Length: 389
Image: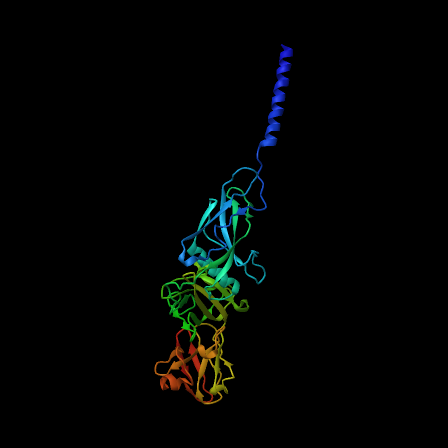
């Protein structure tokens, strides 16, 4: 019996060793490949892909070799203007764009309309322009694969060239806003007064206004009253010299860390069938130019009040004549942001028309502030009133 038991033990040990050797030699092990294959679409070299008149373009890939066994893989397509696929760095933007639609199959049918929009957006970004020239041009595509159950599993395919791609810009069925408003804690009646912004003369989609913001003050904007939009609705915010210390506040409000008077300039553009808002903020400066301060090469700044409850005041006028006042707005000429006062009502009147020579000639005596030597102009952006004393 003892001899039989020893024989059985030896036999079992041999089987165990054989089983372990089998696991080590034959079981697959996950590895991340260096690349995988994106196949060139049929007739790509001889075909013009007219995207606006097509429904889709189909690409196929060979699934990445993860060590000899299939894994659940997500694919996205990337498009570039050249074969390098360079990431954004320093002041340079990326020269490629990733299409938003993901795929889980090795056969990917890309909507031509989506590709059309993305190529135009890529061109405008790389060329830093707002216009697309509707030319046939080569485009380069590659696929990105990611294992859905494994982190750090990104791998890219080879690059495929499409020699002839025609993307066409089509104007969307929307138009730029004709009005814009701001509302906030220090604007008129707190969070109730919608202060109308003024269009920059002869500049479609550009609006400005002057507001006082206390420390940690907040505001929202809209294209009509009660149209509450906040920081997340703005594509870019330029805080000139970081004067305001802007951040996203409570309830998505646009928050100012630093108290002061500021000029707000919105630049509205149509991008991808939607309105894109850009906000530029700078310290508010209001100047007097023209005859009453010497000439139109002179700009004499007005004195700002302590807060929104006070009045701005010009320096005493050194000569008699028509007052020419303007808000200094980033990127705008003085004459495109000037204002006057309607004498009969005392209401501030911003320029919205061509004024070749002066207010008197264009709108008449009721809109021409005729100052005497030593007088000053008083005005409030909060109440919209002005006076000459």
